Length: 472
Image (tube, rainbow, N blue to C red; front, top):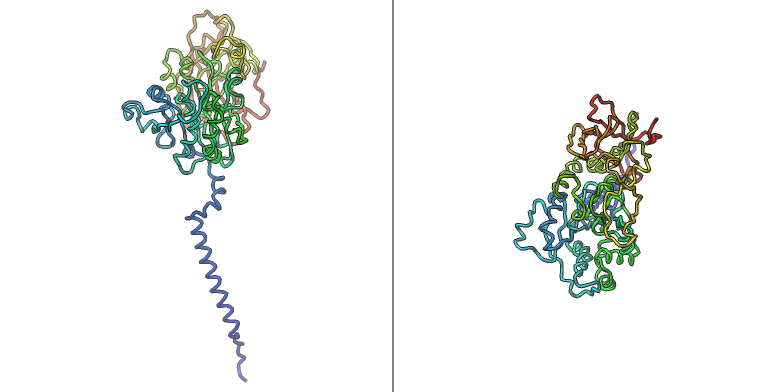
């Protein structure tokens, strides 16, 4: 009996299997080649939007344009040094012409490169020949885009005496999709300035940001707008007008500050909105931020706190001392006001009128876009002020110390004037995108202390249903 043999495969079946194997190999090779082309060629743009959505905005994605002149740069460059970092930042300062010995004026390690603006004599300007420099402001957008930087998400413009808190600028812009058309900034604090120049206009002094795709379109049409709006005063007004013609309005971000005030800015600084501080302006029109200091040293002192915890600087929180019924308003990194009585929160967060008006002779110049609180005529009845003195850091926490500002007033044992210093403890603030979009004021507590000359305060996030009021 012969063994049963297994049937052999027909020749046609073997050829089919071999063909499938060859085709599968060709398909795999094709897919590898396609992936390589996508990752190395111009076709990478097919998936780059997805990449951009997952990549957070950084300082390197921003190009700055700083408006200045030959006459003002030698002084104003000291303000720019406070916030400029040549290792991580791109952009330039636009001048009418280079100052003599320009190299000695510009330390490239701490200042942006200088760029002479193009000639603007061909443009009409009917607001007075002495203000023709305003055309250069409008054309900064075109000239900044023409520098052809790569991987730009935002163009940010400001005066040479605009001081930016750059980490907060990045945080603020990260709320927005840079691929869309955005025009972000702030108007003036002064009602008359807004009536004259526009409530919906982003003022250059406060600084404003334009998303890259919008800036590129604006750069192509700005010259025609400059001629059409020859009657306007400001360069920022021409930018606003041209963007309005493109159908784009300003998104107001309250962290940008024009600062159209004069004198003592304490009231405005200690009542900052619940949002990161992005910019300060008009530094030559306001008093030094700290007593017994000149303007520049006072700003350098302020930046010791701002650099340590940028997102917390100037953030106001209010707590109450139950024993003495004091109201303690902390504007972190700058000053603390201690009221000798119970002050309701809505009154404590009003802007104290410590400053002078931008201009006189018009009732609108004495009106502002925020609620103000009149100062008591008796200086000794006003809150006791403690100014920032020093900061220490350890394991994500900070301790800031504030010293009492001297005022020649008598006081009793229940007065906050007996306190010589206040120490404030807080975690470094790192706001999420959700917290930036829906901000909430933080809470603080007065800590037990055996020292009757010092006060300790801890800042923390409020509990879900926690209210800020005096618990009697």
